[in-house]
Image 1 (spheres, rainbow over the protein chains, first blue to last red):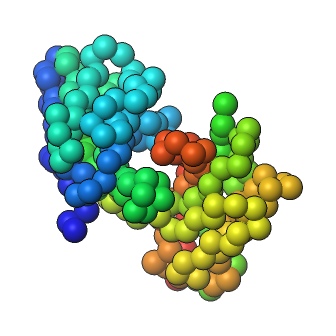
Image 2: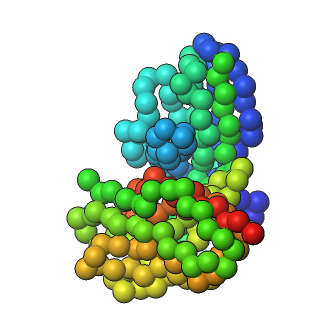
Length: 115
Length: 111
């Protein structure tokens, strides 16, 4: 398997623009997680899905952030409108409760810079 | 709530030195414990895990033992290499698939 695939790897945008980050989980995994990593706050869980259903979105910073998982092989994290403080590395991870006992597999991340 | 506390970094060692990175946790039940490693420019990857008290996880020369009495899961390696330079994260999971991470410890190994 190719692992968790995130796109784009780098995104530079201007304040106020809409940003969409994409994630393809490992085939067969039924859970998907979105994290944000910054120097100041470390690694934060934003939201996670089980079987395409959002389970816990308590980490989503505010209404400007939204996440969807329309099917088992694709998820998006959208920021609208973006702000400079959203600059961070965003990671997607997936896991399977049955096959790999909850071990999370991470993508390479999307580095977002909002100017 | 559940939490994980790691030793403050950064940690700088010479090649072949002995490594310990401390990790303690607070949890109401009996969590599974993990060490993840993040190499520069990459996502996190699992280094080792332990699912119950007194279990020892090991991989690539790294070891950690689940100590319930001290609520600890310290990471050790007998002889580090330059290629071990990375950020190390301790984490726990309580049944649900959600992970609680520590703040990470940056390790630099000098030749």
